[in-house]
Image (cartoon, rainbow over all chains, first blue to last red; front, side):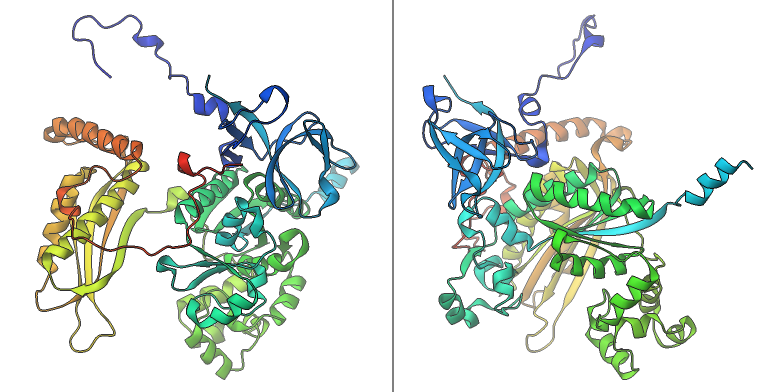
Length: 117
Length: 432
């Protein structure tokens, strides 16, 4: 920082840390990963092409969560519509039952979708 | 004493001090799988630097009896037959995920010693009845939240924890506790002496000749007997097997830190200029590691050696330099390092290996600077910051000392099957 050569600023005692966007978006650094969406997803393009997805693997699965999951060996982004006793996922009305393939899994929950305008 | 108080004492449990070893299962293979679902349940081998040898195997490959360290060309047929996936090692990724596991472990609040990239010891003081729950909780959380499967073995010493962790890997739930004399004894009866932490080949032969075959044979010997025959390390191991924690868990505060880089040269050389370039580039690298952690070093060591297995007379030497004040100026470190190399360099030898070690590390702001060093200090700090931020901005070593960047400088790593740096480069994050 530059020091004032004349009078000391009366605001010196009120210095605070700069807002840090990363800390705001990444609540759990050990379990947060970033991915990019190759295409637009969901109605009204909730996720746009090339959007950055912030994914927190520690979040609990809830109805209406947007999740990154592995379906038949591929990463997919889906919305959770039912969590018990089976997990039901959907994208644009097409329903997938997670447990239909034992290798399918929920990879993590999307905590933020970041897109430029 | 009232009856109620008596009851409380009767049912009160005393806290015990446990040591747990947290071990990431098939660590490198697990890191690769996290971002590549196609590798799930498929055989996978991660190769060493230069793609020469096996360094990590998925369980499917372990079953095929391909050992760690095996040169890959020997197993070509088996690899083709079983469609084994081969990957170069991606240490950027492994380092990132290893740090996540450690950070998460720290959040549970126990003292912790990082033992290797995929192992850490925890010291857990708790009532015996609560231990299992604590360990299962740690196991579940890290496996799910970080995405790296771990197993945990716990007992009263590091040596026993190591043994417990081996069993934990094969067990459902991936947690195994050796919590009482009975379970320890029956476990040790099925353990070969050579499987015990710290018992190497030579010792194993000696033990066998003495009729100590199982871990239990060794453990149940008398201390006097062991003391007469073996050195201090073996006595420590003996005590550890008898639930006495001799090898302490070293947390961050009790550890003296060091940072080092060394490499075998692709071509042996006696050219001082080539050696200088290598050294400068290594200093550049250790300096970068040091800067990332906000550290300064008070001591630098340079070492060289020729080929142990070569013909004729061989040579190795090292030299240290102590700085008056802790240093973090790259150019000072480079100059000093090159000076040290000049002192130990002998032109008649061809060198195979060269390395640099920074020790006596301190946090940047804890040091009292010498008065006359003060001005220099601020300038250094700024210069350093600028270089670092430029280098990280362009994600390459854009700014280097002149010594370390020469055009005919070639030590290239071969890594033809390397995965993207999913967690450390924006261009490389998974696209889904």
